[in-house]
Structure formats: structure tokens, C-alpha cells
Image 1: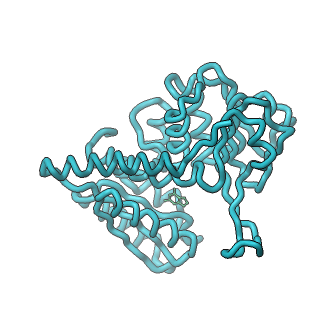
Image 2 (image 1 turned 90 degrees about the vertical axis):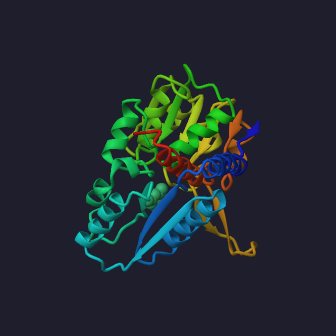
Length: 292
Ligand code: GUN
């Protein structure tokens, strides 16, 4: 069984990006610049945005964090996005989600200039990805694609079962696995909450990608021996035996599934660490005008 190490792979990608940034700077080029907009004081969002800003520093990017009160109006937020869209020094723009209830996520997302949409959330980038055009691919699907590539996992002709049809993970993942290319050329089944005989379908998967958001949902009886298992879930479970008082688990019951799998991502240290690498990679692509 191969343990797919997202932590190491993410560090490798960050090193590659840092090396390229050093080259750009040595050539007198502009430092890549990411702007992150954070509305309100949600604890998890602050942690995520903090990690993104820190990662920018690590690879030599410039970053700007725009903090806004949770009572900002939608119109004011749209104006902030527009100003960043029009700022030629900024290559990438993310608006951290979730947003307060009085603001339309769709309106704000759609305001982001596709050329700076390094989260890959705009309709333009989702459409481009679907058409197999150059596109910014969202962080989690990008991270999974990169893990499959760097671990040389064969996907052509394989049966790939995706559990979960969210806009940011399951749906794009199903498109990426089915498209003509590598990774891709798989026969894909996209399953969701209305799917019947889910366990039976999962048992036919050569590659099982689990993004259902339920702790330890996938058990050994749902996995074919030799399958590749990608676990996107992450859940905090109280554990008084830990110093922190909690531990992290995924959507897959790792201890019983891992011995069956030919390769598997752990939680933590699998897909999670790859998402920041994806954001940095997309920002570098934008700075180098590689997508648009
Ligand atoms: N909230 C949770 N994940 C993400 C992400 O990848 N991007 C943004 N903008 N917000 C998030």
C-alpha cells in the first residue's frame, strides 16, 4: 500500500514555485501578488486566510489582506472586488467563503475578473475547465490531480467513482477524471445523496474519490481490494487523550480501508495540504499570463 503524502508533495510544489519566483525576480520581473478579502471574523476563515498569506511569504510572493466588517454592504464589497480587478499590480484575487448571509456569493464570485480568479470559482473558469481549455482549477480538484500525477496513478480506462457533487470538489473532479488527457480518460460515476446502491457502486471503483463530508463514511465493505482511495473529508473529533483535545479524521475509515487499498491519502496530510499549493500555483500562472 502506498501512502500518498500530500504534505511532502505540497512542500515540493512550494519549493518549485519559490525557485521560479527567484528566477523572475533575478530577471527583474514583477513579484507575483495575491490579494485575499476576508469579511467578518469567522475563526476558521481567519485561520485559512492566515495560512494563505504565510504561504505567499514562504514562496516570495507579495500578498495583501483586505479585512472588512461583517456588516459591509454587498455593494461595498462588490466595489472592493472591482478595485482589485482594476489594480494592475495584483495578479490573483480570492474572496474567502463563507460570506455573511446578506451578501450573495454568486454575485460576488461573478464580479471577480476571470483573469485573476485563482480560486477557479467563476463561471468563466468552470466553463473553461469543462471545455478542457487552459483554466484556473479550484484548489481541491487541482490538488487531487497533482497527487495522481506525481504518484503516477494510472487513470485511463479505470472506473472512477466520485462521492459528492459539490461545485468545488465532486463535480469538477468528475469532469477532470473523464476528460481526454492525464489524469483523465477514466469511466466516471458521480454519486450523491440520491444515489441508490452506493456501496455496491463503490465496490466497483478502481479509483474512489470521497468528498461527502461525513466522518468515516466509507468502510472496508465499500472498497475493492487494490483500489486507489482519495479522501477529501476533514472533521474534528473530540479526543481527550490528545493534548489539543481533538483529532482529525476523514470521510474514509482509514484503519480498515488502508490495508485494502493500493494507494490512499491520509487525513491529515493528504489532500488538505495540497490546496494552498494549488492557490500559489494558480497565482504564479496568473503573474506569468499562462492561462488567459
Ligand atoms: N472557504 C473554504 N475553502 C475556500 C477556498 O478554497 N477559497 C475561498 N475563497 N474560500 C474558501
